[in-house]
Length: 409
Ligand SMILES: [Zn+2]
Image (cartoon, rainbow, N blue to C red):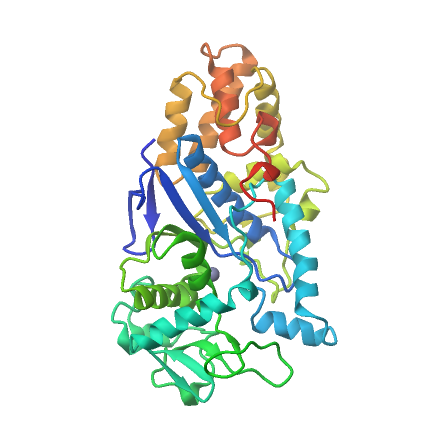
């Protein structure tokens, strides 16, 4: 395999060249567990699970970090709505449901699953490094990043600073204290009664984006190979992450490949809590097998704004059935077992190497499944099919299960 991936930074597809031979560090922005997660989350994490398994299958050692944003405005808001219920309790309840869903969908558990609230020291230290380099300023208990000190700001989004200034920006608080319109909070004073930690600037809590910078640098080092997340995180979150990391370390680039998945739609409208149009993976798994749901999610390219519509799962029943029956005709193997080179494997890799084209890969596997079932398959094709289905994480084909990931959170 020679995997090439589209990077949002630079807007081009290029071969993956890990910083260290044979090792790939991936950081994917995780959930904010203030409420239930929906199918859009599953879409993102199953795509990254397929990427991880693909890299692992071809000998890479993958270190996959996915965080939990357990302190931010939303967590505090929900805690207040629930009569001051402890944030840790809200987090644990929602996170347990999310992890159970991901386990059922056979997503490998992350190598590291860090909580923002367990990285306050690293967040403060990163903020101090930015201040020491003259790229931030403290005002009355708040600390801001000085965007004017970082000329590359805006490059990820590929637009002018003026254009960014017109976008919705949840980190643009305390406008009167800021020197520039895009400056954002690294550390913030809190309202009386809100959770806070001691810091050199007084009691407070982290800004949002600094959490991910501190966690990725703690668990993957100062530069990383792949950073993933939903496209809605490009601004301000990921733009801020780049500014913070590169300012703190002086190393460029912070990340070699920025992968952004599309936003899952429901009948043409972005799925979101505020619009109340959520479909939950958990509900869908009441009526279809988790592998069937995985098949749907991987039948859409990760960069598309896939549109979920009633009946789409039923439309994939035949394909799911063919895969299950065809895989069952091959001798049981485990994911990662070496199968002899086969043209089907090469066809599969050709699709996956082209920016993880899972829809094309699955089409090709479906043609093979049809051949296996009608008796016209090439020698060894059933075994090759089973092997590549397991690389895509299908449990029916013997893919490793979640608990056999590197870490058991
Ligand atoms: Zn993040």
